[in-house]
Length: 328
Image (tube, rainbow, N blue to C red; front, side, top):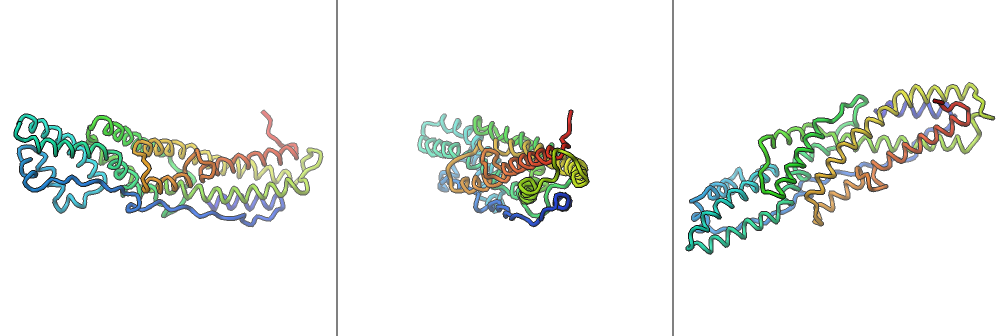
C-alpha cells in the first residue's frame, strides 16, 4: 500500500515540479496491554464451613472449580462464563436456602455475594472484551497496513454485533453467553484487522500531509496553466489524476473508509456497554480517541477524512486552473 502512495506522491511532485520531501511523520499509539486494561474483581469470601454447607446445590461444585488450579488461570472470556453461571446457579441455590428458616445467615451471605456479582457485570464483560487476549490480537499493530485488495470484514463485523448483543443481554437479564460464544472469540482473535487499520491511518495521513503540501505549494506559486488553457504539463497532471489517483489511490481509501466505519461503529457500541470512569478504561479511551474515534477531530481516523477532503479540494482547484475539471 505505501509503495502505491509513494509512487503516486513521486509522480504528482514531478508533474507539478515541487519538492516531495516528507512533511513529518506521526508515531502510532500503542494499544494498552492486558495488565493495563484488566479491572480487578472483588473476590467472594465464603469460609470453609459455609462453603461446605453449599454442597446441597451445584454452586459448591462451581466455586470449587473456580478455586482449582485451572480455574485460577482461566481466560477473561472463561471468567465471564463462570460469573454468568455463578449468578444463575446462585439464584437456584438461594431458592433452596430460603426454604430453610435455620439458614438465615447463609441466605444473607449468598444474597450479598449475588448482589456483588451483579454490580460488577460491566467489569467482567470489559475484561472479557477489551482486556482479552483476542482483542490484544485484534488491535495488534505488528505487521503491515491493510492490503490494496483487502476484503470486506463481514465476519468480524458480525462477530462484534453478536458479542455486543450477548453483553447487553447479560447485563440486563443474567442470561449466560450462548453456545457460539467461543466461536466469536476465534473470529475476533484470528487476525489483527484493527491493528492493520491503525497502521493504514498513520501511513495514509503521513502521505496525505505531504501530498497536500505539494499541491499547496504549486497552487500558491507559479500557475501551471494560464487563462484555463491546458498545456503538456497539465496533460501529464491529468494523467496522474485519472490513472493513479482515481484509478488506484481513491478506490483504496474509499474501501478503508467504508470498511473501517462498519468496524469502528460496532466497537464503539460494544465499549459503551461496559463504560465507567476507571483508570483502566480511561487509558483505553486515550488510545481510542487518538486513533479511531470519529467524534474526536484529532484522531487519526478524523484526520484521514479531513486530509482527504483537502486533497480532493486541491485537485479541483488545480484542474479548474487548467480547464480540465470533469463535466457531467
